[in-house]
Amino acid sequence: MAQTPPDPVHILHNPSGPVTALATLTTKEEGEHHLVSGSEIGSITIWNLNVYRPTKTWQAHSATIVWIGTLDDRPGYIISHGRNESVIIWNAEGILIHRMTVTHEGFCKCDLWANIIAIPTEKNAVEMFNISEEATSLKLTSKLTIDDDEGALMAIKLLGKQTKIVTAYESGCICIWNENVVLHRTRVKSMPTCLGHHAQRNELLLGTSCETLYIFNVDNLTELKSVTLTNPGLNVMALRLSDFRLYATAGWDKRIRFFSARTHKKLCVLQLHDAPVNSLVFIMGQCSGGGGGLLAAGGSDSLISLWDLYNSSSQ
Image (cartoon, rainbow, N blue to C red):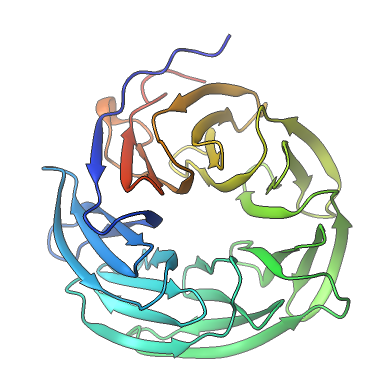
């Protein structure tokens, strides 16, 4: 039986309205982990989680921020993606370092791994860039365009050190690419909405607009399992990278669900938000008992909830 979850550690009220993106930021000076949020009106806020207060807010885009990323190997840099507007690299003081115009009008988010960023462009294309050492420029390395009319690009996921990337389209088509070549292709019955990658288990997780969560083998896109949810529509998922033992999902029904990464069994359901949850991120080093980290969830109700679950006991 699923455990009854505790109350959240804290609830942050975003002064800029609905929260559409979250990321963790390590500062150069303190080496501490902060939370970065993006809003529907295009603003970025940096939060100090020791005092649960914003330390800096600035207007980053004229459009909704659909994604935020940070450079783990270069503390103090933030990358934001404004829908059908631009991708911008910032420093922690909110100073613009580099801007690139983007043309994708849909809901697909960028993805980042080390110094590689994948950016949706046009209707269903993806451009891959190397980020310079000083984070002052982006160098185009490849562009992936599917031949068939599979509808809009919905989600992308970089697969670690390799040059492989997964793309998911409105029609239900899922592809694994190596550079410009499609290695594997499969199809699901509903519209894909988000992707997750468990490198240690060699599994790809796919959330959809219906009640089904799919798990595939990354090598050949063979379906390993499917999980039926109570309500349809996932917006986002996050894997706890400190131990790879848990992942969380959230979406249209306003609920956050924890799953075992080994069995894919549901561990608990969190019901706090009054509107869809748009972003999830695990914050390393921010929890009780030295566990895997807090989970932060940002929603359209302008709230960011912080949860300390499954950090002191084995799963």
